[in-house]
Length: 314
Image (cartoon, rainbow, N blue to C red; front, side, top):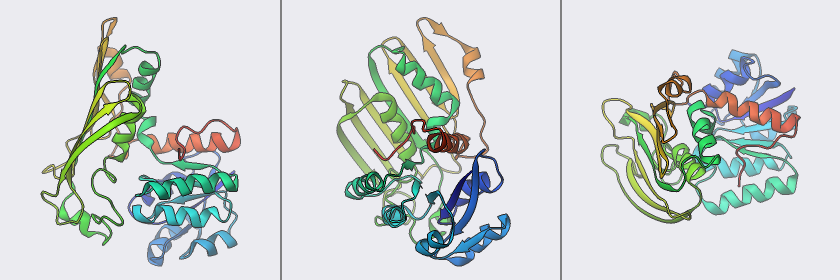
């Protein structure tokens, strides 16, 4: 049994605590929770009958924990990860891994020095349509890649940013690209390959925040293909889509839905199948999708069976 301790009991912690606390992950147990706002920790701890803390060191000194799950503000991910690594614990850190490259490098280096694994939450890689897309890429089904596009058209009203003082700040949030669109940017690079050059523009259109709520990015990949990132939290009155499109010389695929969960187009010279579109689409209850469960299964298999971790710090 792998024992997990959660650090940070805000919005996203509800998803993690539900999976671990309600025994939805075979081989996993929610051991304890921690938050400097102790009332948040108490709320989750009381629900699952576990201990709560307001200090990472205290929790790790008093509890038998195998994996620390970092769910704090984005700007604190690196600091909290490095603090937990001093105790030689495996780490799961929510996206974004860090807000600065130097911090990300420190996290990777420290985890290697301590001999533990560092997992980064990119749960959309486990979406069924995305897995089928990656299989097609790996089988060279597209031939020469031409253009890859992601669109994050979500709605985040001012009330969302006002929930916590860190939201929408450069120091702790990083804006729509780092926060909301990081999953989609990850998918685009995972599918299309390494990036050679970047051009970007951003703006703050509706939300009263420091960072951007809207951005567009043009990419040139090392393989010669081009890419586009469109991201905004200024869609009104509700979420519109979280999508990815891949165009190649032999075919085209579009995965849409608000959580990259539905195959809209699957067209190749040798395969145009409406059945595949229906068979390999999913209907998640929210923008988090179903991927967190598969992500945790990968973590468990990596730790118990020494299987490769799909998403590491590198």
